[in-house]
Length: 624
Ligand code: PLP
Image (cartoon, rainbow, N blue to C red; front, side, top):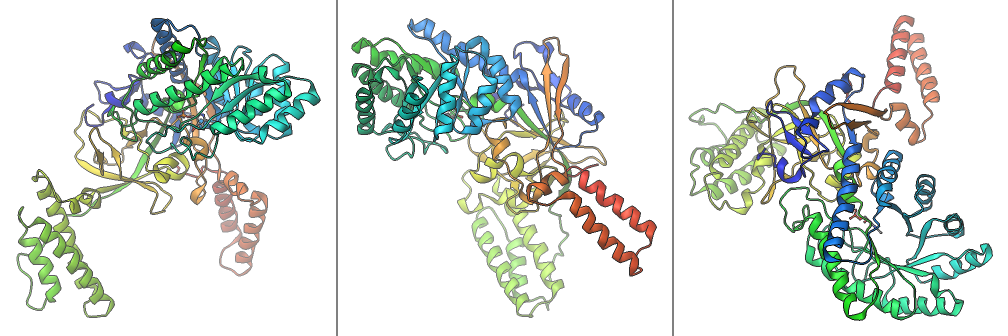
């Protein structure tokens, strides 16, 4: 358990069984309801679905929504807060229909609503949100069509807030509201001067692209007064950015925002809703620190700090406690999905047998390289490393100029990699290894070729170096003897993972097991429910993976409640404007030409066409 830190990042949902398999359990404390991933994989195989598969656990979504709401309600109760909490789920974090359906279903008992930032998101949200107590927060750019829909929703009794993000938006809203004779619920998004640390925090701070600065806020208030519509101003919103690792940043933003809120009340606006946006971070590496991939607070602490901060500002001004809204997306859905894939092959750095001595005629540069290898000690480790790189480059140059043969170059490479392996072994004895030797482990690590696409399934791992917990799903009673990095099947040099979570730092390799002859070896990437699914792209035309949704019952039974077939080859080709039927016709012509030219006979042609057609209808990943 310690090797992969599952206790630290698993939030009680994931654990390891006595027989070494990873388990999922949405009911945390109820041991009976733990299900093994390997059990689910055999069920998935029986259904004829190939890897990679994205597993979605609807109970985990339910559990996270409850956890967030209960934590806020508990904090409010213990602090004697007079308002309440209304969470909204930002659709952009995972827009899949199933997610929205489940969020609105499980959220109903807490009046958990939705946040949208575009017309398609609004249209999806309007069809799913049935709870009129829940908020529907509309951010983003809005045209007349968007505004009209929001106004109609208000007319139907929905708490649908129109959030003004840029100064020019109010005019069109007023025009449409007059035309339809419907008063909107208006919110304003403000820019705070507070700015938080982390990967995704450009939405906060003075120069953030969205939100109104204080003079624009006053202009909007004045314009509303002129229109006689200040009574429509009900909500104030800000969003500091996603995955905010430091609670102090969250706290100072809440304090600043609540001051603005209190001033808006003083201006005469009814208000009532304070929307603190997203930012509640997920502890991806389990370190519980203010590192980018973690957070130095718990969900309970987040809720308590927010409620306390709001109360501390409002107490002296006697402004009534507002309904607190947060737009937590990442925390709501990250745990929900796990990506499963199999390992296709492993490439190991060979251990070479080198002679004791080199022959006289060996070129000098190869001799010097060999001396670095032979003479390596702890004391001269850096010097030998420098020599190794220097002579390797010299030998490459010599090869280019024709002064050494391919055989000699091949021999020099064996010496070089033997030297690097020796340095990596020696380095482990040093308390403070030289910084140059930092990435050595990944240079000599095994490469595990895995059946998935980084770009399609975990794009943030490639785009912004985000870390996700990754581990084998079985064989965990055996000590993994290899250190590996992961390569996907896109054949892109960026299609790899060579940074892994660690409690204290980032690891450059992952402990993995040797492949056993012919046996499948499965890995899981955890906490991928937020942002990854729709950000993923078709690099090398690897399409959407198969998706299987699981419902787990407290007694340990489970159902596959939904299966969504991943993209076929024909699907992905049609996304890039090929017509699969036309492709078949074209290839048939090619095959017919080959028959005419005598390269194949008509029976071959039939077989070849069948293979092409099967390929077109098949999964884009490696099938077995
Ligand atoms: N609200 C807005 C306006 C956002 O832009 C985002 C995403 O960055 C969120 C909420 C979701 O934030 P998080 O996933 O950190 O909860």
